[in-house]
Image 1 (cartoon, one colour):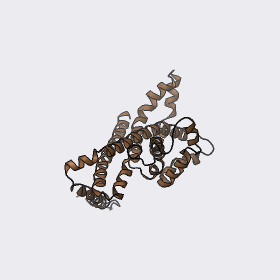
Image 2: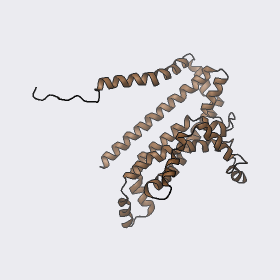
Image 3: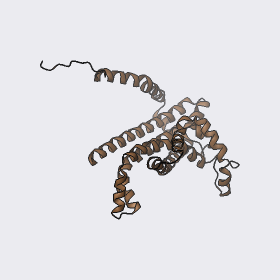
Image 4: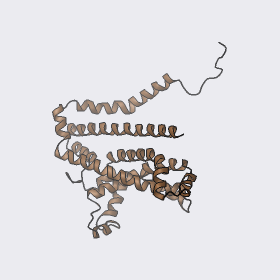
Length: 279
């Protein structure tokens, strides 16, 4: 051969890397989760439907999905504002605010739940003012949304920050100099580039909120048919030694979570493809 590789790559080949990847995923993810479905196969299809579509389960699903959607939508709006301030402005204490964004990642969820509950009860600092307006903060569905908004904010901010940093401010200045309004500059210049990242951040916050337990269990009040979320209902089934009911609910939630993750991956692929087309 005229050309021969004279060095060895430090990166292993595809076969070896794929083997390690599948082995690791099998031990950490696939095997543990597969036992959940093996447990669920002990139930008949009619029993599964009866457990999943019972009145209490449907109320828990409605609250979990509804509150997660509202919380993720709120984070999309205010997460964009936080990311915009952190990227476009320089001010004293900026690094402190930037670090506070990641606080929900580091703070134990149970601690967050206790702190939020103490703030939003009727005699708390914030809950007292809400009570005067006729709004019940803690021990209500509003409290569930508050907790899910708290834990989902970093996902939106950290997804939008790098995209905002890559957008040249001169494009906005050019739009304004040509007579475009602020809204038209935002919708025509910024929004097309921000939309893939915003959708990804929304999906991440939504998926994270669906599985949240620690921060919600304190502030919600855990009232069946009213403020009971799906993770709490699963824990209740386990405490009642209803392992089949807990398994059925967990398996159904796992399917929904997997579909959400697929949608997140698709949004990321679509965003990258969109960027390549624009370039």
